[in-house]
Every structure is written in C-alpha cells, then in structure tokens.
Length: 398
Image (tube, rainbow, N blue to C red):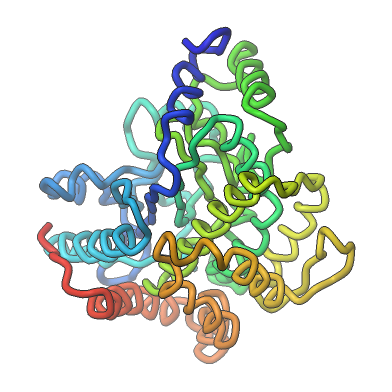
C-alpha cells in the first residue's frame, strides 16, 4: 500500500505518478441485434466465444448479454488510437456477420424493452445484479469512453475536477439517444436519464483539491461498505485506478465512425488542455456541482440545439458556441496529439446535426422506430468502412 490508503487505492498513487502524459485509449460499445427484427439479442457469450486473438483480448462484456465492448490498447497519439478503433469496429462487425448478428451503435436501443435483456453471468455482474436490481436491469445503454494518461496523482485529480465543467458540452455534442421504448422522448440523450440519473455514485463528482482529499473519500466508501471495488464509482469523469488515466465517460455511443473519432478527440483535447493550464499556473475550474448539473440537464434535453450557462460569466450562451469555444481554447494541444484532422468533424456536427438530430428527423419522416434502427445498423457499418478508407487500410481479421 501507499501509506494509509485503503485496499481499493493500493498502488494507485504510484500508477499515476508513473503514468505517461497523453497516452490514449478509447472504448466503444455495440448493440447485438436480432437479424429479423433488429431488436436486442442476448448473444454476447456466443459472439465472445467465437472471437480469436488478438481481437478476443480487446473485447469485454458490459452488463447485459445484448451488448459487447471494444477497448483499444494504449496509444502514444490519437491517429494510432483512431485506426485501432476503426479496425476494432470492423472486426466486430465481420465476426458478428458470420453469426448472423447485426451490430448498431446509439446511446440506447429505440424500442427493445429492458425486461427482455439478460445480465451476463459472471461474478462481477452478478454482484451488480444483486446490489442494484432494477437500476441494473434497466441500464440498457451504450457509450464511448476516452482514457488519457495524466502523470502525477495530484495533477490527475486536478484535471479530473476541471473536466467536470465541460462535461455538458461533451454530452451535448455526443447526444445520440432521443428515441426510447418506441417514442420520441423529447430528450437528446435518454441514455443520460437511464444511466447517469439512476446509478449511485454517478454523474458529476465533487471537486477534489488533490489526491489526498480524493483518497479520504474513497477510503470512507470502502470502510463503510459502500463499495468493494473502484469500478463501483461510475462518475462521468473519474481517475481510472488501474491505468493511471483520467477517464471521461459522459458521451453517448456514436453511430457514425467519424463522429465517434471527433467526440473522442475532443475529450482528449480537453483533458490535455487542462493539464497544460495546470502546468502553466492557470487556475482550473472548480464550479459547483449544482451549476454543472443545470448545464447537464440542458445538454441532456436539447443537445447541440439548446443554450447553456456560461459558468464564468453567469450568462446564457448557445451550446454550439460553447462547444466551439472548447475547440479554440484547446487548440494549442491539437497538433501535439494528432487531434486536428479529427476535430474538423465537430463543426459539421454543429452545422449539419448530430446523431440525435438524425434519429429524430428520420422518425418524424417515417414514424417507424424500426426504420431508424435499420439506419443505425447501416450507418454503423458504412461509416466505419469510410473511415478506414480515409485513415488508410486496416486489417479486419477476426
């Protein structure tokens, strides 16, 4: 152990102090579908058992058997991580094709009921089932996460705290779950309501001054029996104990591959820009959780089409403008991490619409949630093929 730290935190300070700045890993989650109806299909175990290395080691279960996750390795720059994420999606699609399992990505499934989904039968997920019950059963959600190496435990906690303030902009850009249980929810991100607003220790964390303050909180949770592992802290941004990274987890899963890469690139840009500000002595934001939650609600409800509170000025600002400000503010870190070519897509998402905009428009046109789901399946595949062509050839051996 590092000093008086609890078991959950054993070795964590050392991992952060030895971490490498700017290493990047990205995770995205896929819906497994019935080929006839495009409803969710409980076939994780079958798909996972059919995978071979090196793909197998990159796949993971994610609570329900109608979902699978791809996790990239740690990369030194974003283009390398992007190529692997594209390759991973294509590999999973190719493997699923052999088994007759269509693949789609969105923040939620537009019509499959939660009570038809089965929790994966592993010790980890049996614990979630026993602990959370209904909250776990209804969590049929899909996301994209970004891990960024941040050297130094105190510095990582400071960056994680600062990222709280821009989570609403990241959510608004990524919003991709307006349809749920066959209806337009009037939300841009129903996923946020289902997961973030339901799970304990989720959403916006408190602002922690340094690792010691964070350590005391985690140790208290463990000592009082609230948690038995760090993964029971589901905040929308958190220090990732196992890797020495700051993990941003607020974003809906992205159907379009180029948009997945843009959203991931912006998460990386914000992380490294806060690390830069910290190193250059600029104060990092520690806004009250209540104000950030107000912006989270606006992002969840209206996506990129709404307005937010400028937390520094105390005035309203168009959400699209707030996202554009993030691009300008973080610009000095873009080239160092290879982000610039991917962030160009952000402007197109703002001007042409994001995943939530497309789903809602197609549903308004057709009145058919299955037509929307068919479009998600087709776009998930086609956009990955297009991204492969733009990034250069990648192998698709499953």
